[in-house]
Picture: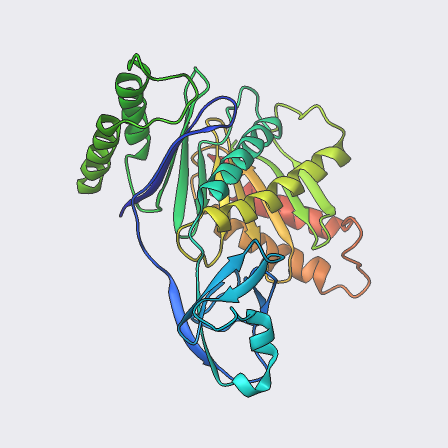
Length: 219
Length: 143
């Protein structure tokens, strides 16, 4: 039972605050023989051919213990660290002589950029849900359900959206979101140095959000 | 009276069946446009959910809620997509109901029929009657 992450968006789909409360890493390492059974795209993301515990959508993290990184300076190639001449991952994997090879795959963590894009996409979904409503006077999305977790959205009359991603068994998330609106008005908006629609960087705000997350977990 | 409308999409994204029961508000679009929007919503929702989730998902997207209605989603391994809009708190398992629609109604009357092409909208009256029976007798519809 847990809250995984928490976001505040302003009315222009900008992200005012984001915080993650989980550090679960999903990674798995496996030895592969030639030819490689998984098919990767040019970002190292598995397209198909994955078998448990590796899944489609996982990203290549390391090859034979050497971390893989994305070289934007060199034609966006995927490279390995600590190799003489920084070897290209795909050249390495296409060479039969290098097999068997030990590959580590895992779920890529969300970068700040990903979060900005995703929260922007949520705005589109929100208004589509309202438009396709079969009954009058419907709001936008308040809850998205999957088999593992849920996304709760609390829309304030001032246009802010408070979003929490939680485990599907977690109760009382609506209360938590209302509480965080209160914290946001107290420690964000009432702060005379806070500029509207700018990201919040306040220790007191962080502290109170953390406090209410800890409290909800005990319920 | 808590079931509003029902869509079936084939794997190409074409709406092959649509029916409504107690729908009180139209979307203001023509029907073709509305089907496209609904399919777009599903596709976007599925990818949004897999990106946003901190863990790996098994079934993925199951539906969403607003303050007035709940959208229930079920997808078969063959890529048929079912969307059922109900009341916010449906009395009964909607996922189970959608599975029954697939297993007890669509499968024997349409999919097992060799003359039916799933690229075309479903016109079978047997299918329609059976679906009507199943939906009208479900606890979700009655309450």
